[in-house]
Length: 162
Image (spheres, rainbow, N blue to C red):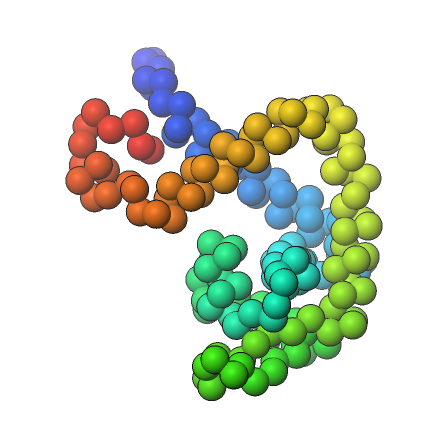
């Protein structure tokens, strides 16, 4: 059996996909008692760290998700009283999603549940290595968002993209 040729970016992408799945499963376990899922927590966090209330499309863009997926999550969050929709002076049909006090408390509880695990992981991996990994992923995300991977590049057999 032949081994596949080495492709560092493909290897990184595979690890990111695996980490994403593990983070979702782990997050679900961490926030279950708070009444959240990883998806609900993710949107609460996006709102909690945004300097201003955001419409669904902006949340989706910031998180790299579809507007429809975020809309479904926002609907659930609103039903549970974690967010409310307010008029958007910039766009009549795109209300602003605003974290409620209950939503802020749920986000704080989720972060408190997650904090011990984060500390342990940073202790094991090291602050500098975590920071370096974060920098690489930010750069990768920025390049992908800029559309630097064109269709022509994807068709190039010498291209190192996955």
